[in-house]
Image (cartoon, rainbow, N blue to C red; front, side, top):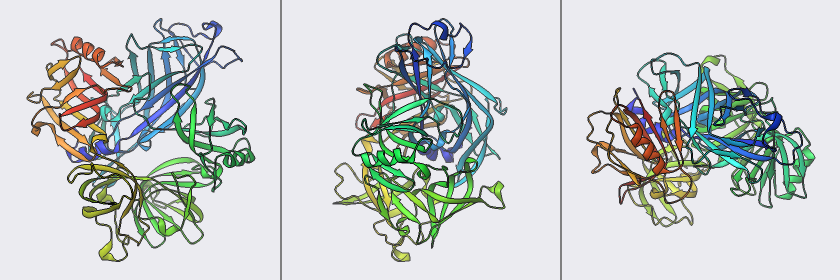
Length: 629
């Protein structure tokens, strides 16, 4: 049972984690490095082969209601058609899927034999899972269970690529495999019990390209710097890992790359020189994009030294839900300690700032230095200082003293409905901030007086030169920017980016009863699908969300037509009890679906994400997950 009261927040919160895995293919057709059929071998190390190649493998998830979803990733195996299995993950790593809403994480760099690979298996261990959902604005713990209600342990998620799109590892152009661990399709949440329960049916979509274009992150200690080439090499340590060797990757920078090293900002070559001076072993984390043609990683932002969370200094990452004087309240934050790594804090974290706290606005080049007053309610932050768990540690309460530390203000996304638009300004019915329901925030003190405090029902946004021609009253929108400095509103928010209705992410989610249905579609063609909304087996989930807007499919004039996008990468998945099949082409997906729905197999769930056009009632789906039984 999925708690309907949480469904709206569910689709706005569960983010997009991408794990990018770089593999080096050893030339010569395999030789002694080839694993035996049916065996599992660790990734062999390169021995200086002159005929090597790289493969990027990515794991991502879709939107939902989790504040934390931390599990152990035990292994990631590639399988060839002849049964040969190659392990690509050198060590178990712990991942909080919910913390990577718009991010791709480079996971590992290994060496695998040349050849075609037709399947991949991701092994997850839920034994020590830490899952948190939001209930009435508060973080609460949840237990992961299987379909029978039993606690989950180790789970293998295997997906087979369609025959026309195997992963080919060969000398020459690097290859790419993107794995989408779709949390929205994989999990249903029941908030009516204590603890809350998350029923897991793992869905892993595979694609030979990144379906969603998001920032790529590369994390790890510095190996070397080549100032002439504008590059540096990092020894990959994904997430907040501090040990194990996951391989090396080259990071490319240019004249506009913004660096922050030990709290000091640089741009371009000056930053690369400062990174070189910091020396090998310095912690680094870079954000940028992957060039499709060359598979080169190009960094827009580089943090190094103590500017990396948890590297020599404790760090709190989250959104400010209230402020009183110099104390910032953050709830549902990630605390990364220098001593023992990352913790998700279900309780309250109180961050104290002062006159000596250094505050910068991130996401800009060069970085802007501001005063502590700039930090207001709703601001996404990374605060650096000394973190201490409270005596009631089980509640998840912490303090962080940043009076002699620093705070990085990160660009903050907000969702809302347009109430009024004028030149340089919008008024919103505010729905959420950085994925958190607006009810979680206390806006007291944000205005020049109590009467001027930010009002979520009439949230005033300065839009500057942004084009507002498509910001129509009543329509949802997304803006990215910074809340106005504390005590200086209105306006309440300074927007740097606007995402209007046609470009907002959309998700269609439809469930059927326990037995499912053998006839889920009224139209089932190679060019499009239309769900039969008159089907009596339709369950409690029957919604289309467009940003913050939730449309009840059963009350819409007609069922949306689901079609592939005009261009760009796509990935479609059919999930059954013991097998999953991923498809790149919509027509191939529909053909297989038609074969499977033979009158005895039933559909129990359908999730599609993409962009919705209300004028023609059409959802252009880049990703679809179908659950069959």
